[in-house]
Length: 235
Image (cartoon, rainbow, N blue to C red; front, side):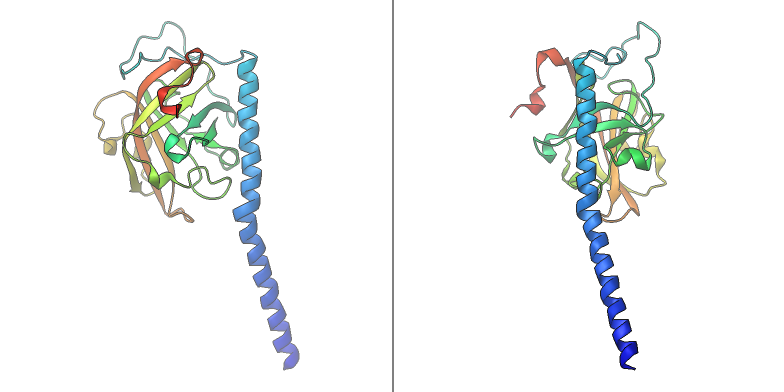
């Protein structure tokens, strides 16, 4: 009997230790690896931009407009799957907060940064530029997502242009099957006509994935990188 009790006790201790180690892995090690991966993605972009190998997009709208100019040339090359193409800044989440944006929302992609939903608009262009990110684990990029408010700036750069979006609605809670949130004109966003929109999505609750939190915004202004940082990023 004593042997059985001792064996069970040792098994409980072992299982408890494994659970603790797994929690440490989720909370610490995946964060360390993700932070390193995200920094590498940003460094990769900066090296590309320094070499002048930025892929050009169609012209962005003038400052303060959401209207659509005609494109003078053919369609720009598509973003490469799993590769970074922009850096996002959200002052509400901290003036040191910046994350790379990569193409697609595959599990492997979201371990290295934020993911652009395939099939949604390109950065700064007509339609809905939709991006997903982890709330917890893998660097916790959207840990403070619920703090976002209408009027907050979401700034992105592709190495040639700064794009400043302004949040109009959210955080809005919905279910994972509500794929309409990334439509070109999201019905529940309040928008009623085509424009240059932004959608950000993450999981809810903080340590679960039964629901999604959504914010929607519009492109407020653009400026070339040579003009310096946009006002939203100046302290």
